[in-house]
Length: 73
Image (cartoon, rainbow, N blue to C red; front, side):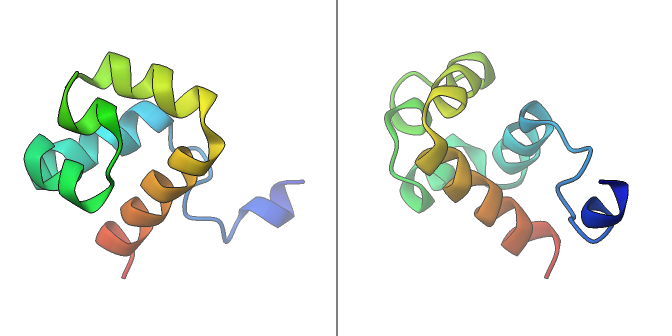
């Protein structure tokens, strides 16, 4: 299993770290325009974002993809 994960840049990175790093890098307003989900545009908090993203795999995928394209070019 570890062999499969060694080239995965998200391995060992928590969803909280991903959201926090993106929020610090872009800010809520730009993050909300890049990924149009309510928790980035209205109820802006790390906690509400994590709750939403854990329930919505499609949204989590978008956030993870943005994280990778932002920090692992």
